[in-house]
Length: 362
Image 1 (cartoon, rainbow, N blue to C red):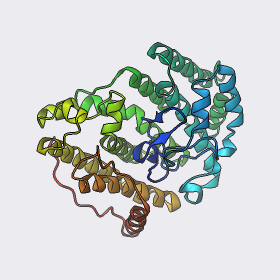
Image 2 (tube, rainbow, N blue to C red):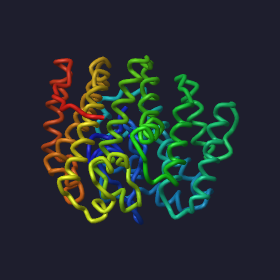
Image 3 (cartoon, helix red, strand yellow):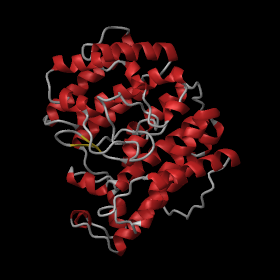
């Protein structure tokens, strides 16, 4: 779910996928999984897109190194190291930092297998199949054939908190799809991808809080998917460099936009009309899920308010750039955080998000 050049990485990533860019010594790291906005960071060894132009030691080593070095890093990256939260070090209950760290580590590892390094597609699929076998081992109560320490930690977390394994399988399925799929024909296809890539971690977070009611899960899905969409709209140019387009092709056709617009960074009336539609769609979705932040108690509820307003602020900045996300990619800076903080507190006190929506035509 990149925390922003945003809130706290990528339930609500998130804002990892949502607001920033992470780089390694070799290549830009772009995750398509939505992690909790308060996803932990592994002290100095693992950095998220919340810190641009820094190095991800684990990626640069594990994705290119031998399995032996990968397992060494699994030993080094103890869950206790995940206690350093960018925002939620104060807002997230201390008792949940370790399990959140395990969830983040599992998702990050699978995402890196699918998206980083120089492996051919067939090898990535094979490695994800091995990773899926690790989940099978957790389900069967057996030692995992790969990443044994990682899956041992996951097994303990699943047992202690009664977490479902379905969301983890969904994440792996989405990462596996991301290897080959570079276009989405329509909203149905894109929403199916977001259901598996963005929503699982939010659902896991609610289970950690013993708050996985149908209403809460539905609102969480809306928030997570909206944040994923915001990331897509924000990163159109970045994704194009990876030969990917997440804008539904049916919408491109509807508004008279072609891939040439993206390739040549053409921001004409057709492009602005398309992006206005997509921004309105994402805004309506995140506002629709916002009641979850009001219902959740204490600091966690306040954190979710900030996640909602972090996403909304990015949409505002896209609009302020007249939808030119190529030359003016929106990122959250100091003054934005003041606005987000004030709006989050107001939302918490008033019990409503306080945003007016334009009508969105399907």
